Image (cartoon, helix red, strand yellow):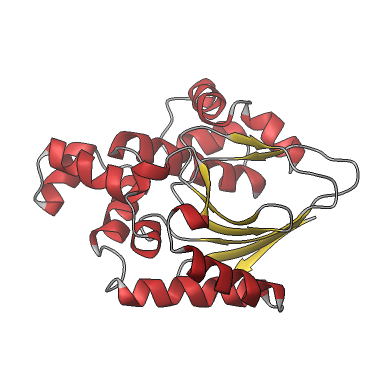
Length: 230
C-alpha cells in the first residue's frame, strides 16, 4: 500500500500511501529529510526531520501523497530552519499564506497531486536561489563516515558554527545526522540480503551488537524487526 518513485526534482522522492481498512501503524524512520504531504483527511502538511522513528496512526481509507526532499533542501523550500520543524507535523498554512495554501489544495483536488507538490516545491526552490550548496557536501562526507572535526575543517567552519549550520539545514547537529545516515545505509544493505554481521562491518559499526543498539535507539526496534516488516 506504499509506493515511491523519483520525483522531477533532483534527489527528491514522490511517495503514496493508501491506508487499508485494517489499520497497521506505520513506523517512519529518521532520514534527515523534510516532506511536503497531502492527506485526504488533514490536507497539506509538512513533516519535519525526525530524531527518532515516529509511529504514524492513520484513519482507515486515508490516502497520502508526499514529496520527500533531499536532506538540506527543505529549509529553502519552506522558508524556515529545519530545526524549527524537528519531530513535528505541521499544517502548511502555519508556514505559508493561507490563500496560497488554499490555491495549492485546489490544484491537488483537481488531480495529479504528485506533480502539483513537485511543481510547487521546485518553484519555491528557484525563488530561494536553490538549496544551500554546502548541504550536499556535508551529507556526502558524513554518510561516508568522515569525523565531524574533519568535515568542519573541510568547509572552513568551527565546530560550533558547523553545528548551527547543520541544525538549520537538517534539524540536528552533524553527529546525529551522521548516525541517521549511517543507519539508513546499513538498512539498505540489509534489505539487499547482506547478513547483519557483514552490514555492521561495511557500515562502520564495531560489531553486529553495536549496529543493533544504534538501530534500536533511532528506530525503536532492532534491525531484525524492521527487516521482517519489509
